[in-house]
Length: 198
Image (cartoon, rainbow, N blue to C red; front, side, top):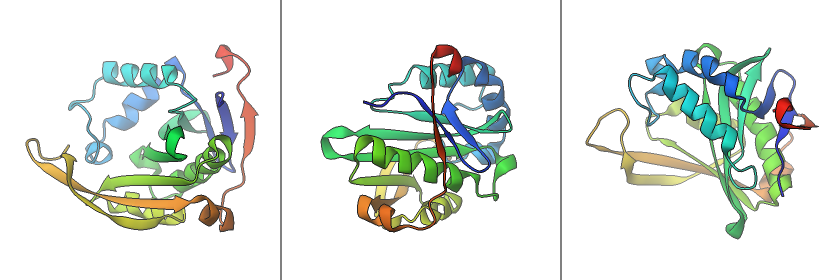
């Protein structure tokens, strides 16, 4: 059974969201480049940020852990793991504020979160999906050692073009492939001791 945890990497701290994180989320969510591939309300209000943080705060760590990615105490993004225990699999999703793009933060956070998830839940595979046009997300998946599986045509509503549907690309990695990687970021597990330490 998974309990809330913090993961410390070389530059980042991944931790459960706190109710006070809404301001940071609201700040990075204002950039239209950041939200172009995400199904978010436009404009993204402070109330939207509060609701996202509240949902993240209340999510079950047994099936849907979501980490706030923090840099020097500031939330710069999120990394979530949606676990399917029945099939020993998970799907990961991530978002990072535009000011931090191109610095390897998402891959660093992802390596720690995915390694933790493989170990914590005994997963056989992890998959990630992205809009067919979201090439930056593909780069993250490749950096994490994931292999392209294919394209799901017309897989869901397009956040960029209301009324139309988008294609998504899927990448995955199997447990034995993950274990063979030498590029996994080292990290330290830090237990969350009580609700004030979230």
